[in-house]
Amino acid sequence: RKEVEQDPGPFNVPEGATVAFNCTYSNSASQSFFWYRQDCRKEPKLLMSVYSSGNEDGRFTAQLNRASQYISLLIRDSKLSDSATYLCVVNSPDYKLSFGAGTTVTVRA
Amino acid sequence: NAGVTQTPKFRILKIGQSMTLQCTQDMNHNYMYWYRQDPGMGLKLIYYSVGAGITDKGEVPNGYNVSRSTTEDFPLRLELAAPSQTSVYFCASSYSEGAPGYTFGSGTRLTVV
Image 1 (cartoon, each protein chain N blue to C red):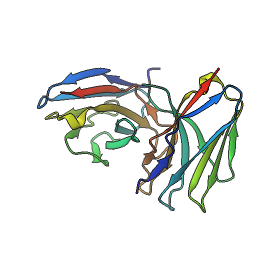
Image 2: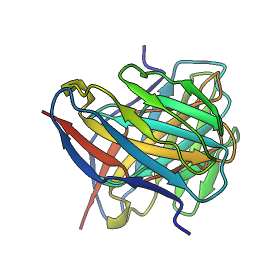
Image 3: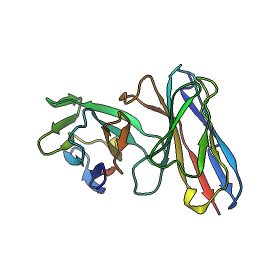
Image 4: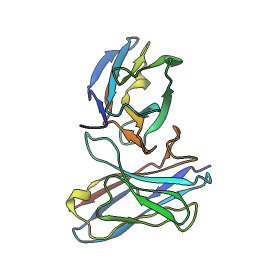
C-alpha cells in the first residue's frame, strides 16, 4: 500500500467555482502534513501546512481527519492561476517527507 | 538569492554512460535531498544528507551515488545509466529534517536511450 494516495483527477472547474479533493495516508503515526503545488514541468513549492484544527490561507482551506487518515484541500473562487498539480505530503515515521502522486486541477475561463 | 541550483536542466545519456547531476544551495541548509519523479508517481527519495560528510540511502538508491564534501554541494552520480533511470530529478534542501519548507531546485530531465 502506498504511503500517500491521491485521486489523480483531473478536476476541471470553471473560474469562480469551488473544488475540493482528498488524500489518504497509511501510517497512523504520521505527525505533519502539507500541501505542495507543482506547476507543469516545474519544481514543487510549499502551498500550506495542515494543522489538526484545520486552517485557511486566503482561498485555500486544509483539513485533517486523523481518525480516517485523510487530509483535504478546498479551493474557493478558483482562478485560472490555480491550475496546477497539488501534492499531498506527509511526514513519515523516520521524519522524511512522503509525496503523493498529485491531483491535477484545471480551471477554465 | 539563488536558492537551490541544479545543472544541467536536460540531458540525454546512452545506456552504460555515467554522469553527475550537480546541486548547490546558498541557504546554509544542513539537510539536502535527491528525489526522482516519474510520470504519475510521487517523488521518490534517492539519497539524503544531514550535513557535510554524512549521507544515507533513501527509498530508491540503487544505481546512484552521492557525496557531500561541503554544506553547499550535493552531487548525484549515475555510474551505468539504464533506461529505468529516465526521470526528472529534483534536489531539495531544508533547515531541518521533515521541515515543511523544502526548497527545490528546478529539476534535471534525464533520458537514457
